[in-house]
Length: 113
Length: 114
Image (cartoon, rainbow over all chains, first blue to last red; front, top):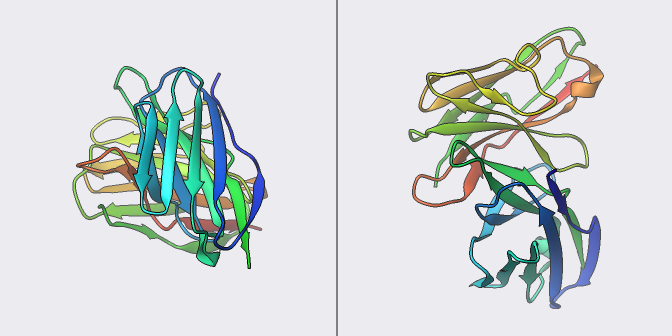
């Protein structure tokens, strides 16, 4: 079956660092994505990992271990505007026929002053 | 990046009626995807819309309930048929980037069925 797990909620302090974990079990794998979604808005793309290791992009970093079915999103120097839901998604590759995204339940991050 | 225009942005509909949601992309794309996001939950794929062929539906979604059209490479519609309050949700259109792996999303249609 397809299963992607994330913590439901997290709280962190402005200026701090927070790590949001994601574990997955899918029938296929062709990349892992992190999206940010503010309330009432569409998801926006943050990062993409297809090989093991760390991808850094400004204040955001994402890590992938394919053997462990594990990823995390690291947010540094937290700002109030980072309060949002963070969605982990796996691209499930049916032999290339359709590269659909399977989303986790999302982690609602609250950044406090 | 792709610019996706989705409309209506929101609607309140009577049960038993149908609503058609439109998705327009500013560039030609091979596949378009329709997702549902129920209140407080994450995104669930409804179907993949391919130009020139029938849409591919995910488990739990059927064509009679969610008919999809894909007349060309920049446009698609999703119809929510014979609506009930359980269909109240946000419906999002999505496309893959032409030059990268990421997907882009429309602003969504917030549907309330009363």
